[in-house]
Length: 334
Ligand SMILES: NC(=O)c1ccc[n+]([C@@H]2O[C@H](COP(=O)([O-])OP(=O)(O)OC[C@H]3O[C@@H](n4cnc5c(N)ncnc54)[C@H](OP(=O)(O)O)[C@@H]3O)[C@@H](O)[C@H]2O)c1
Image 1 (cartoon, rainbow, N blue to C red):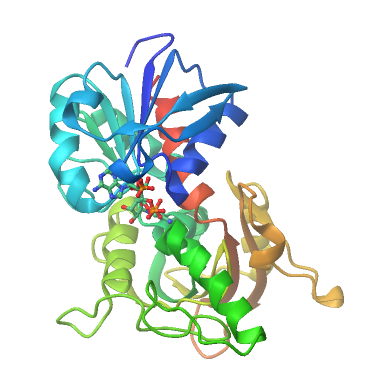
Image 2 (cartoon, rainbow, N blue to C red):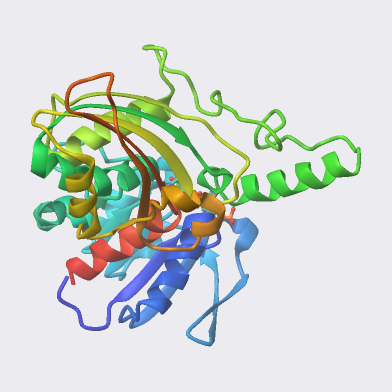
């Protein structure tokens, strides 16, 4: 892209990710020449504000994507499969938040702090990773560079906004209904999400893992460029509005002390250490929602294995796990 004031489209502008892209473009002063906001027929005509001006949402279609220089695809995998290739053929840079193209060999899957250089090899589409993989790899990459990564075991505690805007509304409605002793709505979750933890919130695949768990493994390997990395994941949805947490057990090929890991992470791009055991101050999703870095705490040596370590991390999955990462990619490719 070599346009100084590009025509920028957000496909899915009314959703959780699309709304965040809109606000990040404004916050970071992305040089938007013209803005095109697109969503379903339900949202057609809806006014959204950008830099103090009102923009009206139009219907998402191939025709309405024509003439766009940058397209932030913030809708379903099915819609992205239908629309992204055509938009790319018409000359747009498509940054896709869905999983439609992440596993294709000729589509770069990019976390700028980790493998930003890969983005330039795109052929019109750059894939933005799964939210949990993006957050995790920002922390893993600098440690892997120092000590070699042998194995990763991760458990997630994922916020409901990871499931879209309607999931947030439903958690709030369930919580209110529970407090008032009324029946709880459960159209989005299919069961109570309030005061609960759901590890069955994603389809389970043939290998017994959820599709979210499999995505985390495949994408972490691709982003880090470690196709043989030994890794397993357990994902769970928790009644948190936004910002995912992860408990991570790492094994390295070479010795790495906690003090050295702390030093490396303290200077790693996109990472902040929040680890004050004496005050029990550690990353919490509620406290860190809306922030950009991935926060790391609870760094501990794991005495049960050689060269092993435990840590806890929190990252806002709508920002670093989706919209911020997407805008960073667009900034890099300008
Ligand atoms: N949420 C996250 O934390 C996160 C993180 C990483 C990646 N992602 C991925 O990002 C994408 C968007 O997720 P989201 O959480 O933002 O979902 P969402 O809140 O449900 O938003 C979906 C967007 O797509 C639009 N849409 C739905 N059906 C449509 C149709 N038939 N035609 C045109 N537009 C349609 C919606 O418009 P209306 O409002 O008009 O229905 C809305 O703007 C998904 O692929 C998701 O997997 C999400």
